[in-house]
View 1 (cartoon, rainbow, N blue to C red):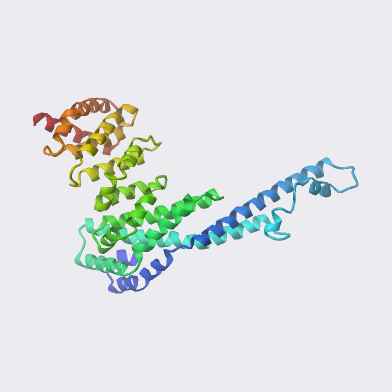
View 2 (cartoon, rainbow, N blue to C red):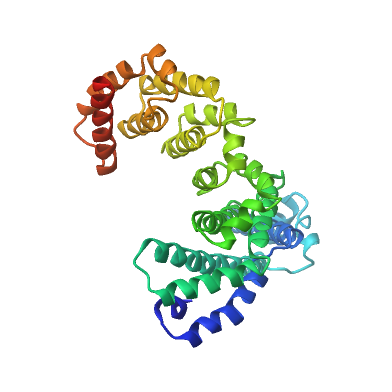
Length: 379
């Protein structure tokens, strides 16, 4: 992959096209039943190890306390334990819990680590194509990336990544006994898969077109709605909203109340609120007709947001979304006047400007807000 990104050698590019793509497609697959069995084995081995540790501590305590009885202290300890062979029966006699844990971890890593590597490599490849689109790339780079995208498009690359998110997302949400560290591993795999899909959607390639036409895009969207706590879920929804009409229609249609609720829901890092703001603004400004009712309801909610103790960043992001909606004087002008949006802008600007600490991005938005107010007052 590094050769593909940094070398001008045609042989390197052909090597990637001939071999790496096939390896990636083969590696981006998961047997959810195998994952379930491996996690169950880990959970049981963890229980066994903890039980054996507790047993050992109990036996040591009794050996110290009992010094005069003829019966050995270890026999007393074993008699006092409740159902001592309950855990051992699942693994057989004389099983070392710590060793069983190590085996379970090793088997889990053999299953999941190839997914991590394949998704990281895929994200890097897709990211390099995006960077080349933005930068002054050579004709050779563009031709190489075009061949790479076409090679990925000829394989079930997009399907595999979508299936991975759907399968692991469903497994993660299903009620079952789980280990927290393995659950984190599953979430990280989903996050990496979403990074790949976001890179695909942002690129102007056959892969982006294939993702937009994929029959499972609707299922993927519904899964993301249930996975907002997964890193990259809402940012992927933002990218899909900007890239695909079907997702924009969903945001201002069936999912409008859901997205609006998430936008108003306070979160520790406010990332979900900011992402849902972007979703709504993108959907509303995409040219879909007859959105007056949606815009009015959204505006009323947004104007209340700065009054809830939101941070300067969130207030500025809110104002930025409203600028996107009302920047065209021919759209939603009556709603703008009736809700007295400009007055709210002026009040928010005064409050936010008094804060001494703000990021460069927030300060930039604030400057846009000032320019917007000046423009509206002049017109």
